Length: 214
Image (cartoon, rainbow, N blue to C red; front, side, top):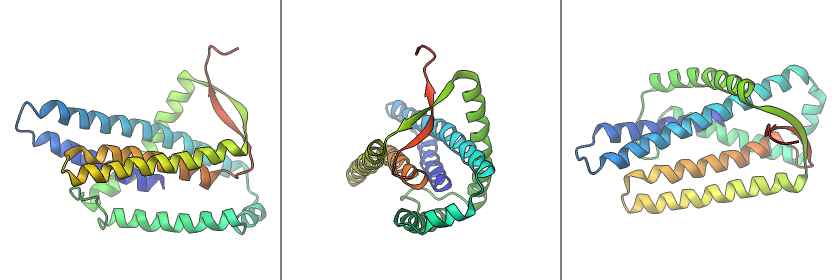
């Protein structure tokens, strides 16, 4: 899912950069610069979030080798839903990689996409590890099940609202229609990540703590 979302960001940012490069009027320049700036912010946040998640997943896989538990979880209702969702995400990712889905944005060559896909996970890990070590301390806190459900539902619902707004902007031929689409997919990814990685029964997880807290 992270790779698919990263590809979507690549398409969005390539469109914004191309839009800026084709600017012919000073009147349009501030808006086009804003699009590129927003794309850079999303890329930076994505790289940090992906890096932290990849670090957590790597640590989990190295420390937890409960094959029987994984099989038991995969055959539960939530596990089967996760498997179906994962297969759908894989199909969506392949469609993005092959250029079957481009969101009506300019196509990117397969060579560039593969290069981007190879580099950004490594860059994400480096950014996350450097940033977490330099600026934050963390502690373990319990997250109740109702909080998990609210996070999943609100993430997917709010993402759907932003995507719907993007469709309206596209119908009005607004060039920056991809911005709310990018925000919407970000919220949807947040909700789906929670569903894919967390059992809906409450859990203890690592959270960032403000240094000013007692």
